[in-house]
Image (cartoon, rainbow, N blue to C red; front, side):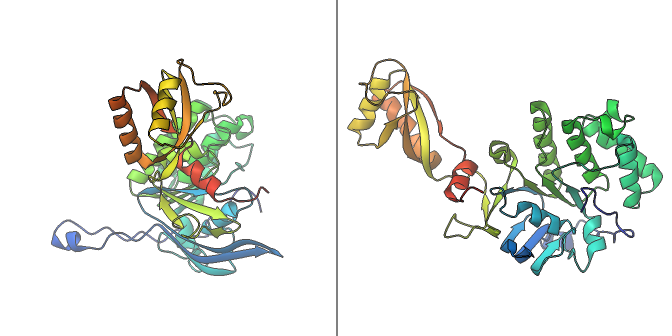
Length: 350
């Protein structure tokens, strides 16, 4: 299998027109979810890459796909993109089965693999024109889309240079433009921020949020959990080829940033005042990495780690500290929600 997906064999079926305004439109049901997966299974010989994956990715939302290396994320995305046939289970992408109705599913899906594969002799503009033609865009529309997307991913000045001379980050941006050339309803991204500089990562986050706000379904697989937490609406955790059960984490699909008891870092101008107050209140705390636990608390600035009951618990902590005259400087989770949930999987390293 190459990194470049095979072009569609014919024009995708036109999307169902949206209902017009009026009472009938107001009474219409909400749109179907962008991606639905039920008990998906796929093996490679004796290796069970997917072993009962189930989740729903909503239209108009960014869904983060999180899991360790080897957990099945890329295999799952390849099935959704129509590049792998599952052994069992049910998949619907924009209402279509990628196996039995592959032409319509692919016509509504934008796929960006973790490594950009293309014809290196073609220019960036020619790459987009070629994929526009593969999706049966007329030449004028393909040229317009190419120009718009090259501007969107900040590659206009490289438009007529061969793809072979682009840096890894520039190729990643061209890969994103390629995935968007046919204006898909569903966007599948496998490690899209790999190789991007900080400015490009910010641009990527803003673009994906805008695409979701337009009503598209965006699924992103990435190991950069802090960035996923900033843009994701929902999270699907995958471990050992299956989605995490409610007993393990709370749900196969969870909302990002949900409040829960967790370790927070609390810092004050007076370390002695902080720990004295916490000890008197009966709170369970421990010194942070900057403090020597064998030395007595000093009046200089310092911090501790303690369990806080979500945002409401943090608010109470600030209120009580101010009331007690403790000079707080900062209060923040010691790790992001996604990172805490990821570590809770207790997945063995592979």
